[in-house]
Image 1 (tube, rainbow, N blue to C red):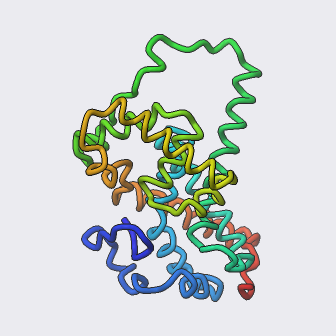
Image 2 (cartoon, rainbow, N blue to C red):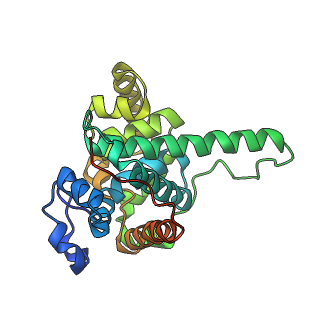
Length: 246
């Protein structure tokens, strides 16, 4: 679900307590958070949950891992919110934090795999994973097919495709988030589309907006977990200094 920020708004699924924050710009929400208004940070999370989920999942190919990355990204963003200088869009800054955390997890997993070579790939491990019940119930059948096809793309292509084609971020924003040249973004997007077209017969474009939707149960779960962690930090006396924004 989300607020106006380039993503679709799903007002019917919006908690009533957050309605008063719907029209805040990112800058206004940040100012309120820095002034101690924690619910304003919840508004930020609900605004960008779907984008961060898609970005993280494109790298990790795991719903649960993506949710963990989202939590880490939000906690880091909260701790460094006063350092956001506005040189880039806030959405880009936030997405970049999530991308860095997701890539760090991939690197850690690869190191673990190298240390433990006894784990062999199980038969059928390279096959497309079946859609889980939540995906089956929440998305159209074609969207599920597209999700599975996206998961088969090479790592670099998958992240670019998710940010550019699904989230509709600009070439410049995508390049900044992934820290690659803009020409690389264009090339990878072109090749990703070509590979997907080989797997999908027709109507891919019409279902893109339905892929990896971040529905209410997930949205509430991530928001609640982050708020609980921030509350624990405050009780522990190690709340990050959120002095005046730069």
